[in-house]
Image 1 (cartoon, rainbow, N blue to C red):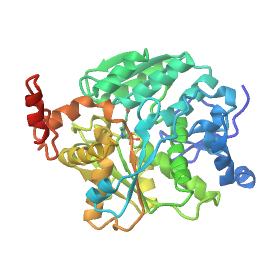
Image 2: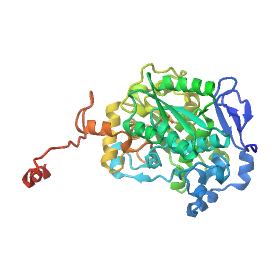
Image 3: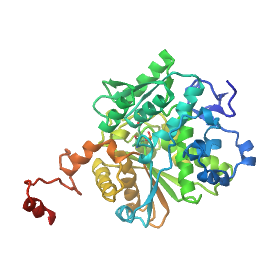
Image 4: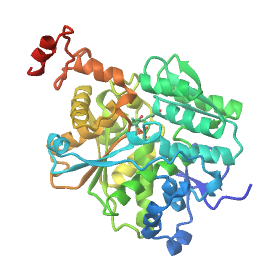
Amino acid sequence: MSRASWCLACVECGASYPGLDVRYTCQCGGLLEVVHDLEALRARLSLATFDARLGSRAPADRSGVWRFRELVLPLETRELVTRLEGNTRLYDSPAIARYAGLDALLLKHEGENPTGSFKDRGMTAGVSIARRLGMTRVACASTGNTSASMASYAAAAGMRAYVLIPEGKIAYGKLAQALAYGAKTIQIEGDFDAAMKLVRQVCDAEGIYLLNSINPFRIEGQKALLFELLQDLGWEVPDWIVLPGGNLGNNTALWKGLSELHALGLIPRRPRLAVVQATGANPLYRAFVSGQDLVPVERPETVATAIRIGNPVSWKKSLRAVRESGGVVEEVTDQEILDAKAQVDAAGIGAEPASCATVAGARKLALRGVIRRSERVCGVLTGHLLKDPDVVVAYHRGELAGIAATFANRPVRSAATLEGVRGLLSE
Ligand code: AN7
């Protein structure tokens, strides 16, 4: 196997390791990140390189991750396990902007990825590296989307996939995907945090390759969300990027991508990050507000099961990113998430609950005057509406405990007659 042109470095102590070492943390316990040779890239990389690929038919150019491969991982085309992920739409809905109290709110819909969530961007990188390393077995703990994505990409690469999911607290669409794509699906009697701890032990003991976002290559692929967003904007930098926070890999990745583009002189400045958590699973919010280290939330609870995480692995990197950006962490209640979701859905766009924390958070920050209404704001919708159909139907039927169905679109019944149906049309 040839050597990699990147290396791995500890984000805590700076210790450095070869780029293809199979390790996820430093000897000191800190997380690792991929370090590219930016000096070498500076001489030969321009934004025009990425734009020129938009017209290409080659899979490595058409993928919304590998189009940016110099800044993701400089792999050979034949090494890629890709489903042409990315290429998601950037929506500009006046109705949603009005709801949020902003002049405009652009929404990058990552639910339009091959398995219906933003996780596919990190996973194409993670599984491509797994294959390059000769791995035959991969594993992750997941609130659902990571497992769906990993199961799909592992199947495409001919690898055995093992997923550990919290029993009973995973949306049905995601469980269906893990089973359908052939992953060995292990329901843990415990929450995501218990599954996360366990999967690290299992991977260590069994030599299985770990594909949670603690894996530094997942972060590299995830950065492409940011590259593609800026490319959608003609490389104009917005004022804010708003996104939900769970295990906190995504905001960490976006900030790394922004910082690299900035260091290369390809963008003049970096936007502020707003990370939005659910009030019942808000350890980063608490750490941000208190200025203290993160204290895990013991029993995280939220209707947005994707972000029902009490002890996020990437919290240090994440908090550093938010602070460095001059950004904020906000929290939103389940009621606020579901009302925002009803608005996103009714605009014809639709997204899963965790995604709509983005819109609920933007609204709250606009209301509080943290985001000014004329600022240029981009939000990330992280997962597809159909990931969690149960919560949609329950909301519109008014069947969610403790939740007012503010914008309910109740299903109605009719006799099988013309008069019966006609009588309902004008309601
Ligand atoms: C729809 O799949 O953690 O803060 O195991 O599925 O980068 O963790 C999912 C997370 C937001 C939070 N929106 O992103 C998993 C998992 C959706 C998600 C997040 C997740 P991070």
